[in-house]
Image (cartoon, rainbow, N blue to C red; front, side, top):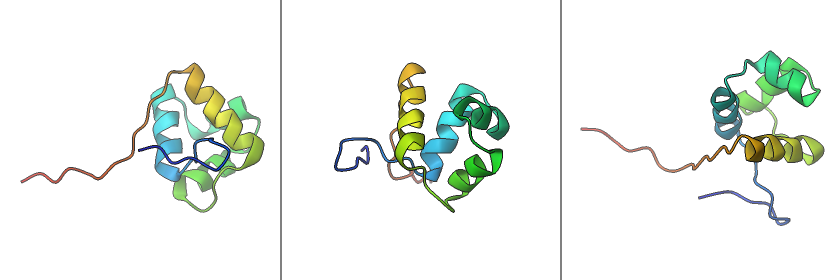
Length: 80
């Protein structure tokens, strides 16, 4: 189930951002350089302190689309 804003853009939560970064095989610093932001900003997104907005959210979506990144959040399966 994809979370979307009223404009139809994906919302980037901490788990989705971290999953994208790992999928790309990047460190927080490398992703921050790719996006033109600070490493601390990536860290704050991944810890849930803040969420990307505006151009940052759009850029994350563009990077994800270019990498063919598919992320589906759902309930964790409990194992016996």
